[in-house]
Image (cartoon, rainbow over all chains, first blue to last red):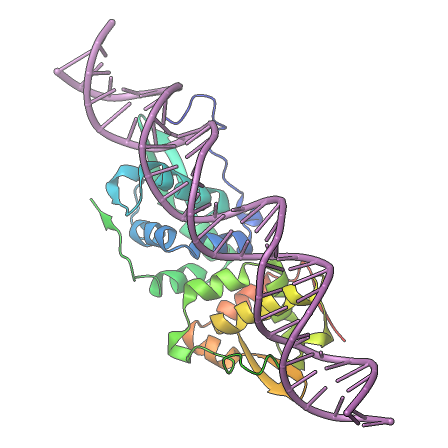
Length: 113
Length: 113
DNA sequence: TCTCATGTTCGACGACTGTCGACTATCGAC
DNA sequence: GTCGATAGTCGACAGTCGTCGAACATGAGA
């Protein structure tokens, strides 16, 4: 879905993932909640399946930040935008970072419907 | 030094160091440069010994952010404020985070005079 | 075709952040 | 006591960030 004329979901290549951006992305509690909820799920999860404490447009913003930082992989399936954590890429580039962040980011758990 | 009536240099206890704050602190290139320059030096280093690309008040701000996040230990010695990375505390609380950040944060190296 | 569900984009807003210059505080040396 | 070095504080400013509501775009079904 998304707007017709939106660029086709830009994701950074693995080697272009920037630590500063990843850390900035993960330093927001809402975004850490998203990643935490999505981690370990092997299929893509649509945005609407997460019970986030913010509005739709704000959630959209957070998903974009995570995608552009290289944390999430997004792909369109019909009217749904599926989300998946890029664990392999992140583990390859910053070994241990994701585990560290998730281990310490369980304060505001996000439910997956 | 500092102002006479400033609170006596608040540092978070090891167990109170918050990952979000640490990551936010380390996601700024100037601050990452500071930590990178200070890491591995066993003695305290005064603020003025670092050649930072920002003004005095801005540097002061960055040092405070790092201290309040739990990344730096600051202590006054006469007219100097000595700085040291809290490596033991950080390694204990978030094993590997500092090494990860420093390994990937050498873009804007900061000189120690 | 019409409608609904999903999700984006676009201003707008307040809060926070990074930056600066000017001023102040403290200490040590003269 | 005075002066210089070191360093913090205090506004001020522009830019970014997180948030929202309203409008728009797309695809799936009825």
